[in-house]
Length: 70
Image (cartoon, rainbow, N blue to C red; front, side, top):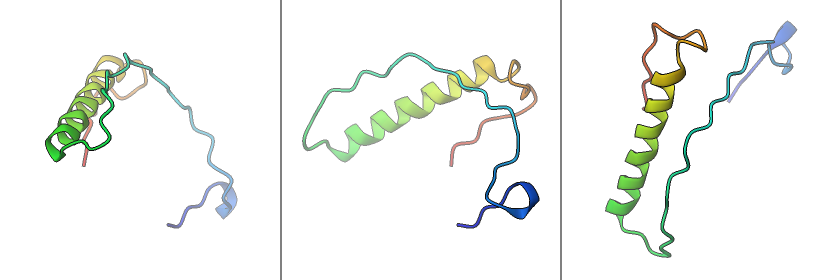
């Protein structure tokens, strides 16, 4: 992976960073989770991230944007 910043160096550009913290997800420990259980937890995580983005995107300057999870 190549990256560059200010003056073509690895020093990052100055940009504002917006951090939002949501409610924790409840996860039950299972030493051998099934593929369905992992997929369900991933879906819950992605749903929570989408909800946080929708709630706070205007305050962070992204009112006209849509979150895309690949």
